Image (tube, rainbow, N blue to C red; front, side, top):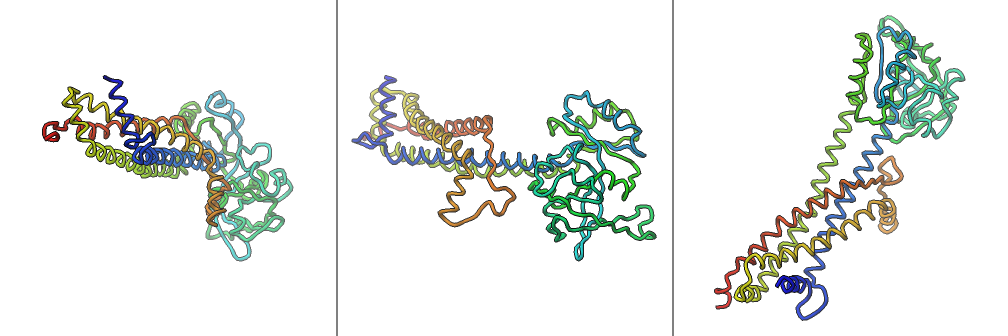
Length: 403
């Protein structure tokens, strides 16, 4: 009996009197496939952009900064005390200060970092388009972010001025204007390029004379552990004079916004899948109406309501399973080749998408857990909504139809 019911389910996939798939089967399967594929692709691209943003911002700024009022007596001793923490990948000393940069007609704010080629922990050395960090040691030299250099209208080997203001007597003392030669340009592809500049530690100490001395920069293996690690470090050092600031305080809002955007876009794109499932159910409902007589005959032959339900639940399950499988193949393939896909569209339609962003490619990361969640949600929706037309078919009154 079960075999006979299976044959009926499979027969509804085909055209009447033919061995070819019906348009209902093809279109509804494609609808589910496209919904799954688009959702996997969008989530993967959002994963990629979030990873790029994290790398290009958190790869530059310190994950945790330690500073002591009056300066560390020995920064090496402090580093040794915290070096045993397995969450810390590397540490270094540096200087930093927000100040003003000036060219002939442009004045803008910038974050100046005092560093050197040996102790620099950021990814900036890997993204230098001109120059080297070693060039900072040869006098008053400076390396600018690409966006900052463009704003100032300056190029390598030209000069830009650092404006130094006496913080204790900003109105009484005249600002000092110290020229620095541009010996390098970097571009990490984020807002860091708009406001970041590097000079040597020696130059920094000579022009700013920092009262709190060097700061300690800490890089973590997992940036998401910054808050807890910061608290643990303060407890270990046990000093009221030491302050610790994590990246969350400056860029935490940005990354929370990106994660929220990822969730919202995923929910909106899920509507495509939901529409495809509703289209499937409407098609099944029309199929039931067109075959009411056959259903009534099955009921008069003694088939129970449950068995009639199984016919259509199985039909919906077959279409859904094939759609999900094809959607996974399409989605993963498109996610892994998204840049080539948009380049293809650019050639055909003459449109440019990547020009509006700082990357020359679409970053895409396919997470296995995301694919599993999408599949489970799709299966749940198909089964949950699939019961509705199946119940309608099972509740068909054979007497009224046969009359």
